[in-house]
Image (tube, rainbow, N blue to C red; front, side):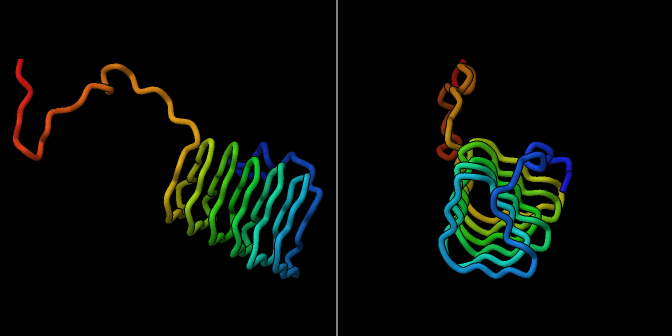
Length: 140
């Protein structure tokens, strides 16, 4: 599982692996990293570690983790305190709240994206632009 985007996550040791022939329904809570190769639905996947959704995996649940890497399909809310990456084979339908976000070419995302920390605007961008709808123009 060494793709361009998930090289940091692939080196992680996984405490919990839901294999390709596994169908899990419920609330999964772990202190370590989780890899999902099968089907997970109907609940929450919650860990202080990382979650990897492999290419053939299907998740219909919310995910709460430090880092989340999606190569399969996810429907549900994702909260990644650090990073969410949707790789080229990944598909996500749902709202996400992240520290940082990566969408590979050919990856798919549909939902609302909220970044946890908002950087300060540069002074040039902080100025209020002229009201374009009313036709007012800035005076020199």
